Amino acid sequence: MKDDQLTSGRRALLRAAALIGLAATAGCAGAARPATPHPTGSGGAPAAGPPAARALKPSAYRLQPMAGPGPARAARALPRVRKEPILRIRGGGRSMVLTFDDGPDPRYTPHILRTLRRHDVRAMFFVCGEMAVDNKDLLREMADDGHLIGNHTWDHPLLPRLGRAAMREQMERTCDVIEDATGEAPAWFRAPYGAWNRNAFQLGADLGMEPLAWTVDTLDWTEPGAPTIVRRVRAGAGPGVVVLSHDAGGNRSGSVEALRTYLPELLDSGYRITLPSRYAL
Image (cartoon, rainbow, N blue to C red; front, side):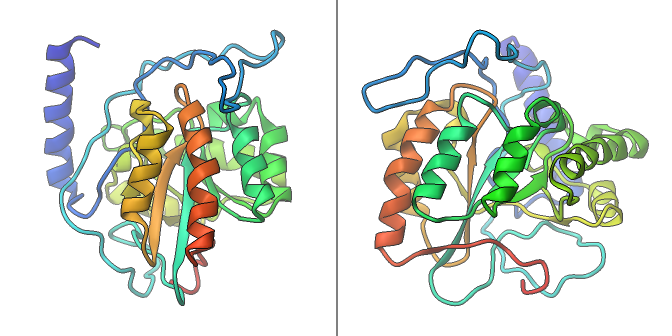
């Protein structure tokens, strides 16, 4: 995407954000880098998948994500249709939630699952249907390990630009893939780029899902390297925090390596990595 096109697109996105009240949403939920294989490094980063694996192409819909100003707000009692995404998770003590978007990717997701399993930790995976449909084995592995699988639309569009019918199809197709693979429909939804509008909230509620955003954005989609990602998690750690990372959409070897460092640190510091309960927010 050319610079002038990207600038114009960003301006349009920010205008849309102002119209639909995204003041509480911060960070990103997309990637603008090609999903190229990454060789194994000295730290044990994942190597490219086997030759028989499906080639993963960068998608034209990937844009630099939108950011909105303003502090995160504590969740209130849930109405049937929320007017804003849940940004913080209530819970006793030093509870945090780890979330991973855009997958599953057979090159990176298995490494993340392995690290979570090693530390007996559960996380949330907001999956895109176009990735999930060819990796149902990874969805089943997530479910078997006790992780929550959320809906992140079919192919990561900017929802406010879609009509109601197209938006419903994005959500519903992904719900079907998740339910077919795991036997359970998703209970949580995250809008790509953190871009919500009235239809997104209403349709998510119609499909039985609660909206979840984030408070700490690792910005791992920029591929800053594991040390930078670790520093961002350390700096943002706190009770009720929801951490956003990605397990697909680009080279996620840095995200894999960072998790191996910050997860045991959080646990040793007394943080409890937990999952949200839609009935106890």
